[in-house]
Length: 487
Ligand SMILES: *[C@@H]1O[C@H](CO)[C@@H](O)[C@H](O)[C@H]1NC(C)=O
Ligand SMILES: *[C@@H]1O[C@H](CO)[C@@H](O)[C@H](O)[C@H]1NC(C)=O
Ligand SMILES: *[C@@H]1O[C@H](CO)[C@@H](O)[C@H](O)[C@H]1NC(C)=O
Ligand SMILES: *[C@@H]1O[C@H](CO)[C@@H](O)[C@H](O)[C@H]1NC(C)=O
Image (cartoon, rainbow, N blue to C red; front, side):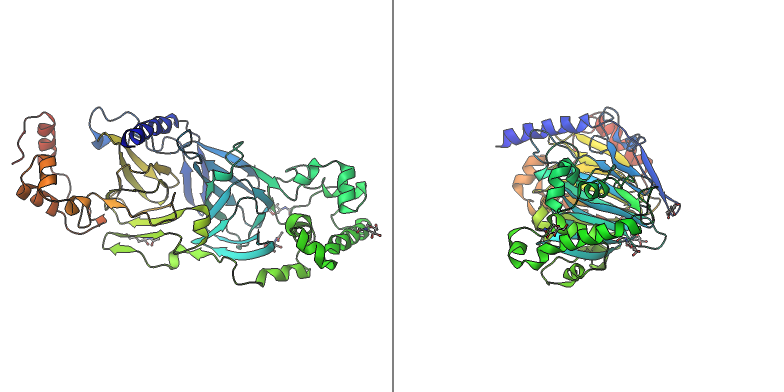
């Protein structure tokens, strides 16, 4: 077991280091830059010493790609680490939507956990055969299951919408980072309905082939469109000529509703629901469903919650399924950490989870250690960078001295992860202290105690006293084996 897992970690490290392609992507928001790629993490090794420069940014996920890009918005995905030993990597998605834009109804082969980084949105999705609509705002967390149609409307006045999401690929078809199936669509994107031949569709919808053509030919604006978009230069969507046909279609689409039997047999969302809600707008009674049952999930605002840990140097929040049950369905946890300038999140490792972090604000350093006790990564990260911490690998984050360092992330387990700390009051060094550990370090118990007790406090530590030249000298000397007895 031990041997096998060690070798799989090594393979994982190799996989990680294969992720070195750098794709830049930048967007502006209210004067603030949100950037990725472009050499993130490079040059992070000033303190690393000689011989540690190789692969210092191997757990930075810099390989970002646009999967959607229109005038009204885009979706950028940073792929997680996959391969034989991680069956379903988590990808991280960045959705940006311009003011007054709509992400048209679609379903995916992946489930999403959304985090509204900034802005306001109305999200509609099918939950237990009903359309559920929720207003989301900054800090909200919300889940959308794989295969369930949803849309996102940027409802804020004149404000861009930024969403960070986890893309859980455990149900993935494995074609793309994720695969979209657009419900509504036309020339671009193409609706999944288009795949059927026109006659079949005409029969299925009980409309003429001309009407089928009309239904599936207007949309050209891409997956994210402006509210004011006009689909066709030829005719307005609801001109008089078409109005009667549409009224007729609307009536037909309603037919299912008259028959309670049919209602139960087929999931209502398949076609009717989205014709109703997407094409025909909101003036019909179907929409009342959204205020229906109380078992539908509500968003969870992470900023409303009191930190799980807080001291003078920062705070952290960790959410698991006991805090927000939809996380259980994705088997994900969520964390948010804010370190004040120069502070450190104590070295620790995750016994049950792999972490994907996204830097929200500020800059900092992340160190990750390999099982063989070598430094696997020592990278400087900045806003927008995505990093990956393999399960079991010890790591720590240190805010730069220029300001607070805030990062958010997903951990691959909805169970309480119980991070194991390697320093501070709650450290495993303190828990394991005794003759055995002293022996392991080759120190007397008293000496070990002195060292282990030197750090009081836990979890988040204050900035180090400015490095003294003396310290550097000692490290150099120690490195040259001139000091052999620490006593
Ligand atoms: C999206 O929201 C805006 C503002 O709330 C609203 O005016 C618009 O009609 C909505 N668009 C759609 C397609 O639902
Ligand atoms: C199909 O549409 C016609 C009118 O175009 C209507 O008379 C008929 O009842 C519809 N059939 C069904 C099954 O909805
Ligand atoms: C629609 O709105 C966008 C941004 O709000 C604007 O740039 C564009 O010119 C508008 N298009 C039309 C056809 O009004
Ligand atoms: C993070 O901490 C800094 C102070 O260290 C504070 O100014 C900032 O508002 C905090 N950020 C959040 C999101 O609370």
